[in-house]
Length: 268
Image 1 (cartoon, rainbow, N blue to C red):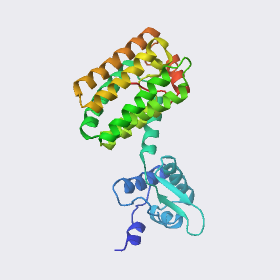
Image 2 (image 1 turned 180 degrees about the vertical axis):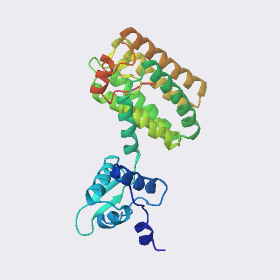
Image 3 (image 1 turned 90 degrees about the vertical axis):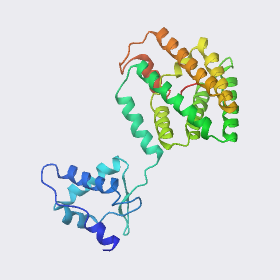
Image 4 (image 1 turned 45 degrees about the vertical axis):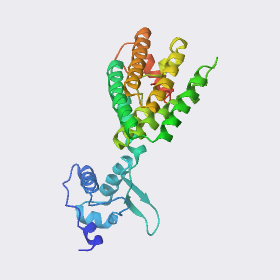
């Protein structure tokens, strides 16, 4: 059977009532299990109406649902139509980041998760990272320290650099899952590390700790690197506790600030 014929016999008739949802689920299942691969075109609307035994409006609504999920794209014109999109880390991270923002978690739970994640990433980065990557991490961490040492730091620039440092470190682990999760955390609300940068009593210590962590990673001293990571989270817990913000409240001040400053992230 040709590839065209296979595509044209993918789907089964749906029941009335929740027809658009069933159509969307069948198409999504075909994408997930590999019957429809990235770049593949779906059958025409008329062909899908026949296969699903439903009307054009139902098919269009299903396609719209899958467009919103980022699974399908639509091209206009005579040779247009719906096609399967290639998902990238940005699509995955955006969805997870949105989920994190919509499901507030106690600061301690986020901090606990980030500390565990950072410890794993650091050890893998030390094992798999290239010397040039480790040297670049040291340079950028030192630059962050200098920027935060200024009398009036540019928090937008420093938070963007901090975000880059976290993602670069995750990439060094050579495991895409770590990188995807770190992207999402940086796009979401991370573990409220922005509080360290905003607080002048903690700012310089947090930045210096990032620099020390990078040097330990570059030097291959795993115990020292993990000790610095632990110290970062000691500082973070102290800073959050001093603010006395109630936990697990989506309208709490620190969550509002974090949503306004989405790029402010952590110093290791």
